Length: 159
Length: 159
DNA sequence: TATTGTTATACTCTATAACTATA
DNA sequence: TATAGTTATAGAGTATAACAATA
Image (cartoon, rainbow over all chains, first blue to last red; front, side):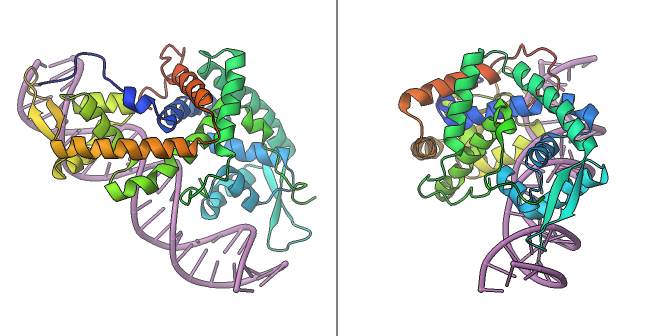
């Protein structure tokens, strides 16, 4: 009448993609915090810096749409990157409401450094996979979240 | 000097397993909230109910270990399930500190109902995948989070 | 009338410290 | 001395409402 034999049966949950994707993402993303800490970056600020570096002139709204961040929550994040001299805000030529974001030299340099760190951590966290398996995994995961024709999905237009 | 051409280049981030796993999990897990709401369940409480149903006599500690929940945070969740008459706490025979958790008839019934709902939502969220692809995906994701020999991982012993 | 960036704020999730009763 | 369950609380993440400037 007590605890289960020894190993806990999680078979039912393991049949769901959602459960597995979440647990895997927590492992891989969680492992990122330690190696990114010396660079004073988090997974989110690294993503922001990367997108600005790869898309100079991008706006805050576009960053929100790309990363699933709500506008009010990106303000402090971008302000922090600006204050640290990693990105700059330039006036948008065609829309005076918006600001175009650009990486500074320091920002571009830090991004290159962080890119290597993240790549290494990502590989190490998924060391149980072969190179071919990792490629397949990326493809399958992208099929899921790039499908925006998921009928009757209302809740996660932002997520 | 403004916004990028049109499509935003997210290629660098898409090369990381962590980024893709997180975005996919947000889509699949986020889609769960709506269909589970009528049953007064969330992804977490559904997982708890499932594990108790499949492992009668399991303890709170074991649930924490299986789902990556910290002990202080599981208290209110279990109390809610007990109050709703879905699970019961019985005295643990061999350890008077612990409680063995069991599903009630109502809990088992609700779990069966929810299981079908979650299965349907999970399938619908991953409709872009073939059955074979879904199976491969589950295998690859499990390889990641079931690998506890990830050298020098300190941060996510709980996650 | 709609959208960008923003403030203020609330709500949820996650994390740490410390206590009790047992082991 | 360590562990199961618990309380209290702090912090991070995520959410809505509303505003000024501009479209």
